[in-house]
Amino acid sequence: MDRKQEILKAAAKTFSLYGYKATSVDQIAREASVGKGTIYTFFANKEDLFQAIVLSTIEEMKQQAVRVLDPSATPAENAHKALIKMLEFRETHQLLARLIEEERATKSKAVYDMMQQVEKAIVEFIEQRLSRALPDLETDPKLLAYLLYKSYVAFVVEWNQLYEQPLDEKTISQFFHQSLFKGL
Image (cartoon, rainbow, N blue to C red; front, side, top):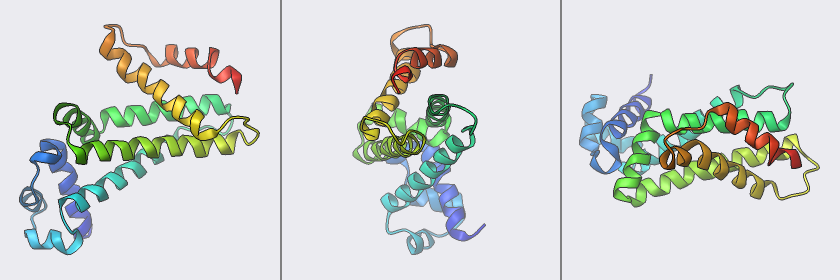
């Protein structure tokens, strides 16, 4: 592993443990076993380093979503699988989970911007997949992608905050197939 990758790995771990605001470049340097100056040879500042980690995390999330796609499945089934995988990734990935928690608690602009970037990447990924799978779609694929994403977030994440009984994946899938996906 090269020095830059070691720094990125150490920074991701440090941000995961302490959050964005509480992490310093000094902590990252200690975790990476490098001098602070070495970090600045690769990254202009903490924000630049954070941005590199966010972009890497988005790519990792997309790759996991692509892995669950099945060429023999319907576009609706694949959309469901990809959305569930991305939401699982979002909720279980240590860095993202910590940052979601931090954004809710502190309203940090840097963390908010990062979460917006992640959500935008998810919507764009869904939009591209919908456009390929349903070339004759009569509605704007970006609007549909946004609707799908936000609906899934509502059922997978927000439902659990309102109700004690979380919805399982099968229930969510059946609901979307019976309501939204029937019109596609």
